[in-house]
Image (cartoon, rainbow, N blue to C red):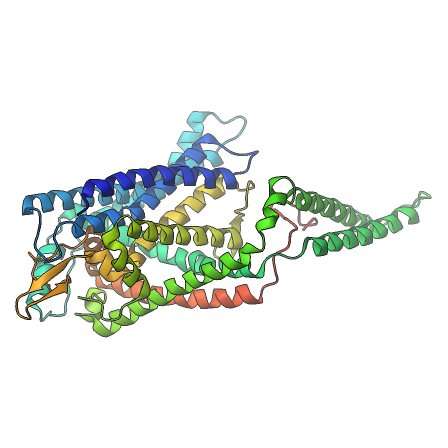
Length: 513
């Protein structure tokens, strides 16, 4: 049997990889001319923390899976079980606290600190200005934490099974004020994370693989389009220039038209240069692998469909087999409908780190499609586009806002992993001996409290959805909304024209675009 130390060592290695991955992402998307060290460091730290919060889940699962043997007997004493669970719980609490700190205070402070930058503004004035604008969020955070102290989990509907009732009493209702405050705050931010999933992740799940399957327009077609547009623009500009070559004065309308034509000509020349630059050097070599993008796109589309189907099956199982309905956030004792991702992870869990790798790949994929969604949609407030998110052209403020979006998305992912693999994520590979039926059964909350140990992520999500039942209800229907957004995004991605090789940026003038 594997030692839990192996899981912690794997987490350290994954943590190093996570930091390197986020450094690459931030450097790749940062504007080379406006990059700032402070925003870069804060963004990398924030993204690394939120990814680690998800990647600690397999270690949590390994922790409970190595506490008992195939006969359902515990292999360590109760003191060791408590200590190991405590170490996992403290890890989650630290990471959640850091997410709240970064998302609500540190990143907004750095954002406003950068906004205050000017030639005649001192560092002290920038700090004071940033504190002034961040003060509201500090007050909001304090109020949220205080309100959470008074929120206590529970269900208004009676539960018939005594083992389930005991589990709710000992594991859910026994949390202290600090835990209740933190769980309530995480629940609020997770609610915002669902919005990020509806807008960016759901669309990215559909659009990223479909765009890879469709590919980009042929380079020759874009070159011909630019050449024809340049010819027409120069011809029209030449007509106005020759018409008034004798010194005759242009009308204001004609001067404006000529100015627009000159701007359009500069824009077309700029687009042509960008297009050629994007297909030179290493990129010219990578074109050899372009035919394989169809294969990868098709594979990724299957992965996206697998994720959506697994979530849908879990939702159906919740509404049909919940032990106490909406009053406890559609909590289920044991999944009756098996979904493919749960079965895959359960079958590979005994061969750790294979399950860690598979779950890690799912997490990285969802992370990638969320980034893809941000790239395609841009950073918006409602319909207003605030910042573009393009390679080497993203403003520091855009990076900071994107890091908040990704942090909220990964908080939602914590909850979605329990939807994707309910049995795996809550009890791992644990089994228990049922003396009544004289059989070995997979662990569930139906089992006696001393027979099975639930993962900390299972306890955390249960406490969140039972903290106040409206969180569980909103999460449930919001997940259906995510599936609906995926279907709508699929239709949009299919009907959209193939991507052009012509690169446009937000700093192009309106006339150029």
